[in-house]
Length: 223
Length: 215
Image 1 (cartoon, each protein chain N blue to C red):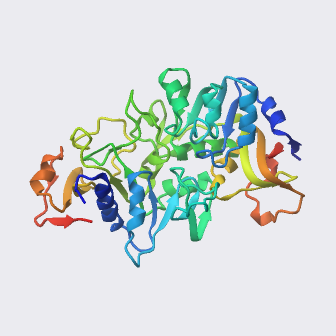
Image 2 (image 1 turned 90 degrees about the horizontal axis):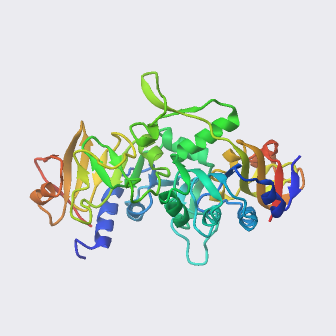
Image 3 (image 1 turned 135 degrees about the horizontal axis):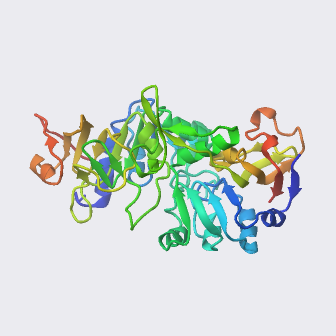
């Protein structure tokens, strides 16, 4: 598959993030790209996914004709319930989120900066879809992972020294996984952990606005 | 004891300028029959409180497409073109509230609390004009309660006391909204006799319910 293919990027990012999950983790996946993570949970690892509209134990999409009109995920897609699943109201759901009970959340991003600020809910004058549950998720989850393409359509870095769009939350992002690199944010710095197969460190550095702390040994990730 | 009424009667009780909260998440768990009657009746200038503005032709979105809403408190409007257009044209006033904050503000109203302290929204435009309090060295945003004249909710089943049972993810904001409005109308698929719902299964106690509409 071509490295610039969107599907390739989606699988690359989803598969890499799935490796961040530990057996028994409770996790919430944002809509869009983050949902890909659920397709790559390593064998022998049992992870429970929450959907913030009110369920823990989200299963795969139902077969055609088996949809239940009362059973959807936060993106409005039909889902199934795994054994051990449970339903709850929105207050409990956001108590789980805000109260620090989730091990990890994965969200999409428009911009992330080196202090761990995330912007992903509006472009003033252009797009105002709303924050939905994103502000609570980023504020409350133990580990915040952003899944996004490294550059925007014009080729500009979505990793910035300082976000220019309205923030979703302040200084909460721990890890960024893009189609080019895995980057950890610590002490207001971006640490390059891994780069995508087929790329060089120079290419990643060139595509990234803030300074990256380069590791002694380069680790590659692929699909 | 709640009154059992039809959807048309329910819709007619809601007047212009009333604040109405709808438990609905992308049209799942929405009192769709009552919404349809409200659209037919065309009552205008309503204030809408809901998680998301649903779709243009489904859920509470139908009230927006029909231009019956003058202002709204929602957390998400990305799935509804009508509200985005009206918002961009300045025809509708919208307060964007983080979803968890919206739920707790409603809960606060229903539980008689003066507000909630949440870390959500700190350092973002959500904190503008709000008080920040430091509790045990940690900052929180003071968010005030949200109530309404009406809550229009959806449940799977009610007994004649108004005790409610929900279905799967159609529960969402319905239970909390049942606590926070002056009058609460529930649309249900089934009404059963008192005693037919196991008390252990009741999610919303009947004390909160004023009217039941059977689909």
